[in-house]
Image (cartoon, rainbow, N blue to C red; front, side, top):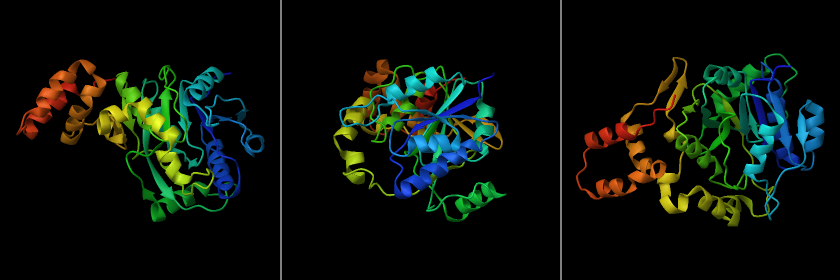
Length: 311
């Protein structure tokens, strides 16, 4: 039997209250993708086995965790690769609904050894989506366009990548901070194309609070695990130069195709990130940075020099 093009995998929060509703909405939306995508739920949180059984998806209760009980990204990716033969895998947060444009977009990228990611749409959804009624996807997209808000370039909730990528991931705690920024960095450091699919893929984030964790949002972004993630990602050493976001994509996917991003802003960003991606350039870039009156034209030329050329 031929493996599906894409395997989606995730970890979930306990299926309680509103979180239960939106996670089940997300998982059910993935089961409606065509051509069929494999789905794997990792972890043993309350309600996960039931959700996997209800939607006919794979469930793997075993997952490596840190001393706080938080799933570890390295173990998750290693297990997902070992369990599937799909050429593309997609880590996706458990509250993200997808529509048919997702598979179409990844099909356009395959067989490139690339990363596909994009910004999300924030939408208020409080009840189960009626997937069993005709036109459910059209109604969902209409809700997004009428009430949704396109979120920040740094908040990235899905990563579709060729299975040859990400063999050496730091011990990030999932769901804390910085691991998503590192995913962009990891692809760029390996000279792989990073394709911004924001215009092509409607990733629907169902808004929620953070009551699932005793420390709330403040702990998730600033607590001990978050600080550890930042150190693993190198952000504390290099600051914003290491905070890779969708601004660091090398290509953009739209209705006109997949094209390199060749804007002045992109070239200037390449200059900022070059000493992170290419350590041998760090002394030279420090010298250039100290010079006063560097014109945009010079920055543009420097940006072209270090711009990614992945295929």
